[in-house]
Each structure stands twice: as structure tokens, then as C-alpha cells.
Image 1 (tube, rainbow, N blue to C red):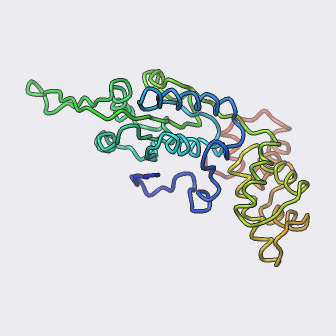
Image 2 (spheres, rainbow, N blue to C red):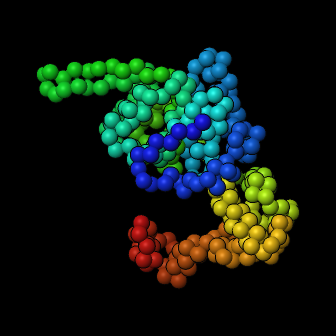
Image 3 (cartoon, one colour):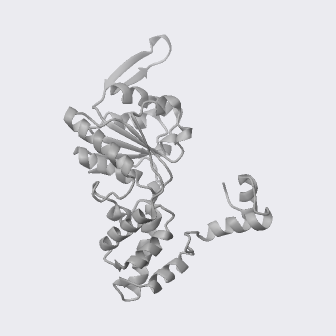
Length: 293
């Protein structure tokens, strides 16, 4: 079961009912990232044999590659709940302390964008991860005293797109560092094939491969395009996707066969026409584009 603590009005990663429909439910549905799957499978089996929570793990890599999905699969495999948090929303120590003290044994705490947690809040995690306890200072000055609160053994899964921004004390407390790579074209094609059935549409091999080539090795992008293909197909009164529906969808989304969208092409054009093909600094580029950093 998934529990999400809403600490901020920000929607996490565009999560919607459509995203949840297409999420893999277990490792049999989780395509690709075999090295990570093999590592996690051993960690889960070991935890079950020890009757303990799984070790903490850092999940790093570009967005949209399955970090949140893996966290939910791990919790389901452990027979526990997953609690989803957003790092930027954890502004106070009390926010995190309240959540930690309410975790049940073997629960999974998934913190997205963990590199954006304020250092003062991050320090709460040190003793929680190492010794399953909270050290809280009560009072000030000479009368201040430290109170220790025991926690149930839990698993912290920290997701980040920028692992280099994590502090060494936090990074050192993760027992596994699992890096997600972009998916092979064949794996993306398999994901598209699996998810097309969930959306009640049918794609032939050629259509599936063409969509895979436009997805930039990223399941989230593949699923986004696939949902729009479904919409175009349904509106056209069909159930089977033809080349026409794919071309129409890509045209509507302003995506070319290489997976480049309008902004991508604009950036490349600016680099070519204004900066003779580069190199160009990010500040100069965004100034020319008229975009925010």
C-alpha cells in the first residue's frame, strides 16, 4: 500500500492516475535495469531471511527511469507500506521526525529529490538510518537535554538526479548505490507493448519500434507519447494503431523521429546560428532563448 504525505502543494513528478495505471506492479513487469533488479532481489531475500527491513539504498539517475516504481515494488515485495515524500517539502526537522516516528517495522520511506533536503533536516536522518533512533535536543543553554526516541526498523530509499549534491555523511549511510541508466531501445519497445494493452490499444511491431525510437530511452516519455497515441486512435474511431495515428500524435506533440521536441530544436538552432555550433555557456544560452534557468 502506498501512503503519500502531502507536505507541499507541488505534485510530485506529475504523478496522476494514468501514471499509476502504467507503473509495473512487481519485478516480472519491471523491464530493464537488470543489474539493479538483481541487486535489489538479493537485498530483499536477505532481509526476509533475517526478518529485518531491507538496507537503505540510494537511487540515482535521470528522471523518468523508474526510481519511484522500484520503491513501490520493494515495499510490495517486503509486505510493507511505502511512504512517499518530496525532499524540497521537508523544511523543518519536525516534519521528518513526525513521519519517522510513525513508520511501522519494515516500512519503506521514499524521499524524492533527497539532495534538496536542508542540511538541518538531513541531520535527523543520520541516527535514524544508522541506529533506528532520533536524538532530539530539548531546551536551550545549560538546561538543554537530549532525548532519544527509538524507531521501528525501516528502509530509506533516496532518489536523486544529482548525486554529487548529497553530503558525504548522508551518502555514506546508504548501504547500496543503485544508478539508473537510460533504457535500450528493445526494453523501451517491450514497455510500450506491455502498456498498450493496459490502455486497450493495439500496436504492431513497426509502430512499437517507432515510438521506442522517439522516447529517448526513458519510460516516462514513452508512456506520455503512448497515452497521446491512444487519444488520437480513439478519436479516429479505431482500436488498432496505424502509422497515420503515430505521425499525427508526434505532430501534435511537436516531437520528431529522434525524440526532439520544440524546445530541443530551438536550443540546437540557437547554438548553431548564434554561437557557430558552440561551445556556449548556459547563462548565455538561456539569455538568448529568453527562458529561465
